[in-house]
Image 1: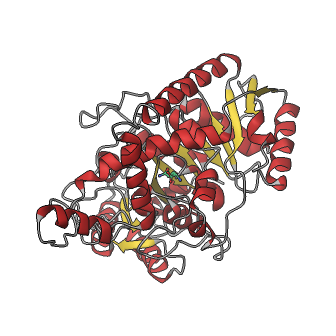
Image 2: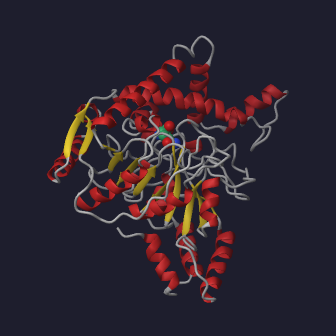
Length: 466
Ligand code: GLN
């Protein structure tokens, strides 16, 4: 698909549509929608901003490419003055007092935020059912989950309620819902975009990223949001990625895939066959295919969840009823903490806090937390080694098709295992893209650290040739 951003930019310039009419249309779609994608619509600000864009166009002033483009924001980003709930009961009434760096950069470029989007509470989940706003329904089949945790964002893009949305990806939360709703999702290299103002889940893998209908739109939005930020010491300076010419051959010589991902019993036959057929098509383009050995998917999942739970237990300890959100009074301060946290966190979030505190506690941390850290280091080393022999790694996004709404809630362990193909790349901090091609839940394309441009370039090539 062509760039939606460029198309709408042209329509605004040629006065084919007014920005106000565009924003009104999208707001109406968001409000009526039956997919539960919305935590809050931002009508007033959006319409006021649209009016300004229209005035500029009317006066013959130049407008930037993102000026007047309506977008969605996963409800885990601070956007000053808006309710920022993380889809949780605890923060249901919390209003952000500042704006996340990535979102501010989009605002500075003139993009118009329309909606705070439904997601799994604090990013905890793979189905967007762990939310006080009702399970998000899949864009293609409302009986199925939207995926998660950025489910609302992926559905809004798929249904064209937003032109693009900003999701958050800790262990797959952009790539997997993008795959389940047949749109594009990018998790950039860890640190390429500042995390400042993204509510922390697992700080060592949290990434900001776009969900769009084209790779070109991923590139445009990524360029705006990237860059070093003094407020996030893990962020780094990066070069702008220039527009890619669509080419019929690719500079990529060798593509690797993880044998054990495909030989595992957990993968659906249909996804396996589609993936193998995709490998054959890549090979037919003159690119060598290399089978690689890797850690078993269950090792990746257990390492990721050990670390993610430890980090979230630590990050969420600040939500105790004192400074942010809801507070339920107990007979003393300790009771206040426990009642607030017991009543206001969801079951899934409490499961993770309890698990995280367990692996961090004295007597267990050496055996579990530090062991997971050591496995993580080995995973990173393995990636570095693999990228000396291949240029890209491709994999399915998920082992199975999206489950029906309600199923994942009955079996959290099965839900954790469904993240088998995404979490490893998060632990490695690698740039990874999902495109809606190659298998029924998409294809994941990953390169070595900081090779975000190469990932988009190869994504373009595969998107055109598959
Ligand atoms: N499903 C994974 C988890 O629940 C990833 C979520 C995310 O990336 N925020 O941890």
